[in-house]
Amino acid sequence: MLVSAKEMLTKAKAGKYAVGQFNINNLEWTKAILLTAQEQNSPVILGVSEGAGKYMCGYKTVTNMVKAMIEELGITVPVALHLDHGSYEGAKKCIEAGFSSVMFDGSHYPIEENIEKTKELVGICNELGLSLEAEVGSIGGEEDGVVGAGECADPNECKMIADLGVTMLAAGIGNIHGKYPENWAGLSFDTLDAIQQLTGDMPLVLHGGTGIPADMIQKAISLGVSKINVNTECQLAFADATRKYVEAGKDLQGKGFDPRKLLAPGFEAIKETVKEKMELFGSVGKA
Ligand code: 13P
Image (cartoon, rainbow, N blue to C red):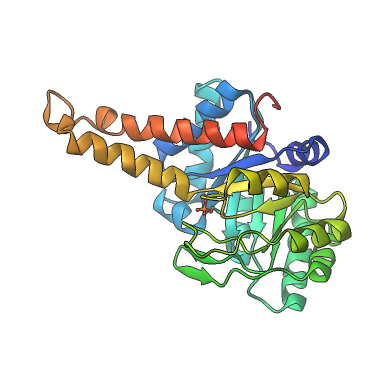
């Protein structure tokens, strides 16, 4: 069964830890993340970008695969299936397809329009018992071809969006998607602190979890971050392990070309990455 992310994030904010959102791309990704969450007794959020949704043959395919996998693998920890950086139309489609959580990213709209669209989705999600993530201040880097500048959100705008009754709020604090450049200035903790002062109990979301040093992650959690998104790091770990397998010529030995063998090292690498992140975020044993 899928659950809304509300309860797991309320508990995380109160308990000063964060729940990881790990983005999925296919069956192997999903299985690796679900099994690790179960082994670590940790709540988990499966993130699906609009591009990944399309790649996996649509949101209905994703919902059915995730629900069936939870049942077949005997997963009992709380699992939320969440649209990542959704458009207004994408959010509605995911709600129809049975996602338990959606993000509406209206950060590129003027604040009035972001408020208006977020407000409408708050109404729909509340009625259906789904969690809703909103965003203020675009997150830098590239995701599905959209490049954001990595702004710091205006804390007052964050309060306006938080007051609409969203479940969790993503605010730009100098974080970016993908690898961080050498000259990255780091997270703006002053901005994060100001946002938390104004938004109180609202669980805050840190995007771009890949490559943020452990001490910055811990400080962000201490300042109210309760959900951390990780995508690129699992992709890098998967690619690295797969490359090593092929470079070692293992696909040419025996039945090493069998996809169940070929994809196994990458699968294990995702599991290891997810485990490390759950330990760092403090969500182990919190299911
Ligand atoms: P990374 O790819 O940098 O880990 O960011 C993931 C993310 O924020 C998804 O929304």
